[in-house]
Length: 332
Ligand code: UT7
Image (cartoon, rainbow, N blue to C red; front, side, top):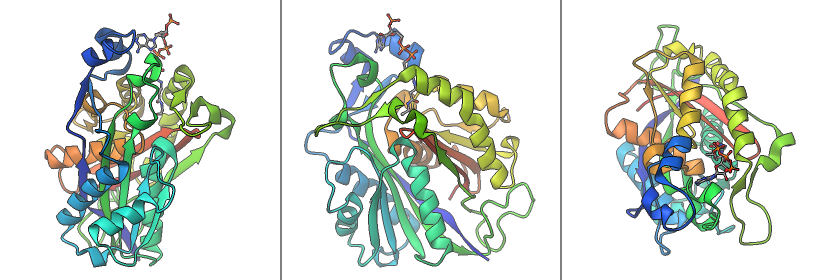
């Protein structure tokens, strides 16, 4: 049997910090409201000359360097994004050109905030099927480009950034983490990508929107999405664990889409996690970076040593569509 694993991670954020105090000067809001309703304290905003491609390439370059692979080893580059302006060449093709990756299949994938976990599953499937031995999977967003800076209901939420993972073929990995069986993942390093739990509810497709004439602006029915996320999604997260042969109590970490600290805490409570589980709360510093939020938060936790190699982590993202995707991975 063969499988795949996350071999390395990387991330990039713009240097400019936008605080709640800055937003108080822009719209009718307050630091207290933003913290209480969302948990967000700061977010990073890219300058006009820093593009989605710039951030995606920076994150991908770090992941590639950490993997020890050569650019020519990469057979697939995919970028999850809903904010990129360029339609063609794809952001993935532009990243491949910057990193001098020759000949890889390159494509962008838009599943809004669920994009990275969706792309990770696609890469996992491609690697398992032998269509590529190594893949670069990137989530990158410049949400500030598609933010309505006059709408206090959304402009306080969003941020820019990118996260990337190198997904590598691994012999001996059957179907993901193998955790819970005491067997690790077989012959490899103990790292694996578990089966994805994914889907959508198109009857509520309008609850998160990026529609209209160019230039689109992010809009959402916040309460609808909040109730959906806190009411219905813990079952999907449990399903992702079950597919990996795990119970939520077996997890070492949980990295959900970073939209709202209250949603993150609610999902964690519903899952019944161990007390020592590491929960990503990067939304506090970075705001909602859509498809970038999961790889950004995961890469930071791994870089800081808060998630050790081999740690079993549930990745879980949701948003526009309404869509969701999640899988258990083990950390590089
Ligand atoms: O990433 C895609 C997936 N999206 C999500 O997961 C988002 C899920 N939803 C949420 O996180 C929350 O619904 C929000 C953070 C977006 C909003 O929080 P809320 O507690 O649902 O607030 P609300 O929209 O019900 O608004 C409550 C009040 C309203 O005033 P009235 O009508 O009660 O007078 C809003 O006008 O808060 C007002 N409000 C604000 N006040 C100060 C809305 N935005 C602001 C603001 N500052 N920035």
